[in-house]
Image (cartoon, rainbow, N blue to C red; front, side, top):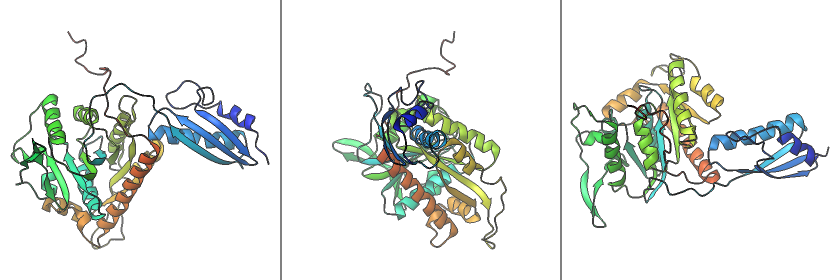
Length: 376
């Protein structure tokens, strides 16, 4: 069987890239098509760094050729991202920090901070240098989870400037608003005050050399999230959700925010927390209290990677309360679970860095959706 190049191009004219009106051939996204018998090589050029758009375009090309040209075609796609030069944008990178990973959830109470803490210590155990920015201004958890509630960042001089030195615990550097307030004190701040505090913890700190900075974001899709993506070039985000429909609906909104044209931060994948209950005395038993594989199915529906599932195990809660993340329990089921999830996160970061240009800090160019606009 010999494939016809013209027939392939005609088939590819039936599909478009998300967000573009013209078909792939007309828009120039298909740079070249070469056939060798039953093999076809497609050169794809994209003008957006969004990982989900790249994957969707590649899947559409394969599906279209197999359905409209030949089900036996052997398809190879060479993808390249060409992003046009942009005007100078607000925000700057932090020297010495290689990857900045946001950990987000659309809904509170899904264990996002617990997942962040365990990802951090798992990365540290793998030999990476790791830091955590606790951006959950109104509910900071990291001082408790790392048993450093009584610690205070000290001031040091770096290149003639006064900088905060992050608190270090279990080989993880941490900064949190919880270090600057009393445990019983509520943080009653408007958005601009919270954003200013965050910027100080980001840029007025001596983070040193980090392979990964994990940013523990607050629940929802609000002001703090915009401040972070405007201030930092986020490498990608990890979404945490529980399996039930209520949590999944909010997680979907979280994914939608980061994938939106205005934000455009790559989503590295979804982690399902509280996936099932396993009694300590019956480790083989699984009880699906909140439903089964909801986050896994959501990841499939949204075409983003599924990074793994974390069971409900009593030791996770106990470890968080005692200030020693559960992933540090050598030989435990939780250590194994988080090792696998962390490897998946690292794999997605490597894949993202190989296929996409560095994320730039976001410049918000529209006030659409802001209730204060045009308010008299």
